Image 1: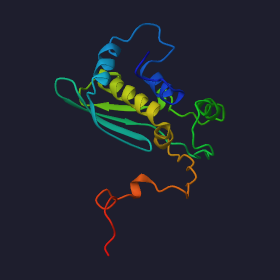
Image 2: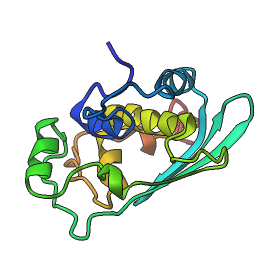
Image 3: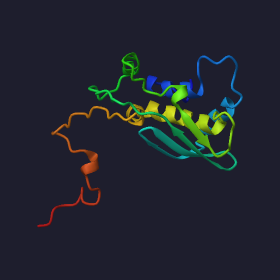
Length: 171
């Protein structure tokens, strides 16, 4: 099983690195996969329309990816973000990942075609993170997923103070 693109959310980002329509293998892909699998993509930051990272490949290489955000982000009602939603959004003209022609890449390794192994490794890491957290894929394109309803019978763990949780109140 692949480490990347295990969900529809990650697969659309993985297709930017590994397009289905290629006529011959990309010699950069094996090394890019190795870099991503060995956690060599570091200092990754994401935001609407951009991803930046440092790829450790015998030296640090700074990578920047820029792409358009949705001009009219869709309203996402289902906080679960099922895989089927990816196809639904694409059918509505709001694909989760940008098209290859909409992706602007920069890497300080100065690869001529913009498809160096460092850029490909960052795309693979983006796919892995989108697999783990589908809301990232939406945030990259400028949308916010639906919020889950708050259960008033439970206290969110983030609201607990571990210093005082087990202590008795004064008095």
